[in-house]
Image 1 (cartoon, helix red, strand yellow):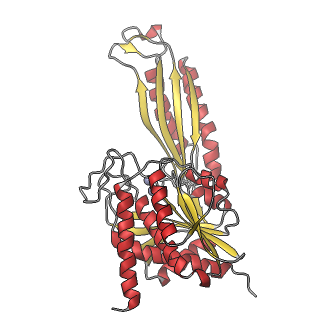
Image 2 (image 1 turned 90 degrees about the horizontal axis):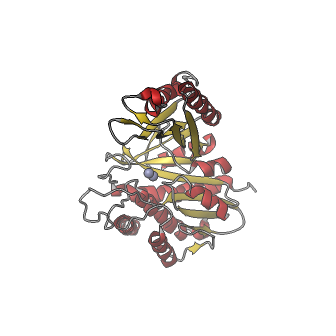
Image 3 (image 1 turned 90 degrees about the vertical axis):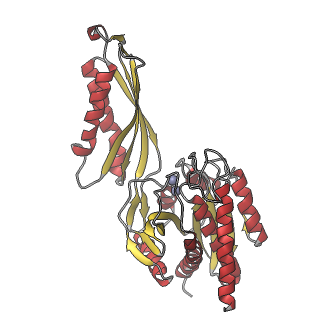
Amino acid sequence: MSLQHETEDALASRLVEVRRSLHREPELSNEEFRTTEKLRGWLNEAGIRVLDLPLKTGLIAEVGQGNGSIVAIRCDIDALPIEEQTGLPYASAIPGKMHACGHDFHSAVILGAALLLKKREHELPGKVRILFQPAEETGHGAEEVLASGGLDGVQAIFGLHNSPELPTGTFGTRTGALTAGVDRFEITVKGVGAHAAYPENGVDTIVTAAQIITMLQTVVSRLNSTQEPVVLSVTRINGGFTWNVLPEKVELEGTVRTYNEAIRRSIPAQMTRIIEGIAAAAGAEAKLHWYPGPPATVNHGEWADFTKAAAARAGYEVHDIPPQMGGEDFAYYLQQIPGAFVNIGTGPNHALHHPQFDVDETALLPAAKYFAALAEQALAKLKPQA
Ligand SMILES: [Zn+2]
Ligand SMILES: [Zn+2]
């Protein structure tokens, strides 16, 4: 076996260890203290500098030299409030918490890339910021990172998500929107409670809410172009407490997903018209509360093509994948910094957020090598020509 292979085998087992260590101790968004300390320890051990930034959890390291170009590679580090049911020997040791989105895999990949880049530090034509982002699952971690100033000066940024639908050895991305804008809403419907036998004495919030729910689907089917996908899902209904009383209040909650930012911005007004119009017709009062989440993740064409070419060179089977209605707060970076978000095959496996979700660990080393190569190639591309 060549020396190259021996070191690669060592790195492969190291990354499996790292991933399993994180997997065993999952931490929820904004509580990734132990995870951050572990990552800091592994980076320190390798002599990789960690930037001094006002981040409560998560961190940014830096490899490279000079005052030239800067690129960033990003992973997320948080877990989910899910009870793990994989039965794996390294399953979560923390009840009710699980790395069910594979952010442990992402962290091990990006740490591996950092270790590989460190070995080539003196050859790098610039600097690579290595971002371990907190709180992706809340949709707000990326905003904290941007506010910390840790990405100032970055000229291109790349991030990954594992894909249980793509087999190991495959790679997917696309130009344009890859994930949707993700907004949450709540609706309160207020009427007048009454005896169920005498509805004429009240204002029925159940019937009103039912009409609102049905009519809201016309936001998708009648108010926006069929050429621009929109999903509107009402996911919670709370109202009433027994069989013979009409409640005075009903609460609804749900989410809207779309790729088009102009449509996204027009939807709250469309919903408000429906909600308030139906409530007025019923003699009730209803109000929409809007909680914006991350916008669509829109890959820059030039860099999406660049990630695909690098993936092909690295031996991946490269796919153009369709956009997904899920969300990803990497979107905020791409609003300010050119770059692309990519999917790395780790499947077939259970879907993201499933209690039996797992990843194929043989995908770790190739992905680490890919991200190290991608960062270096991006620096070379950005380097001003002499
Ligand atoms: Zn997730
Ligand atoms: Zn995720």
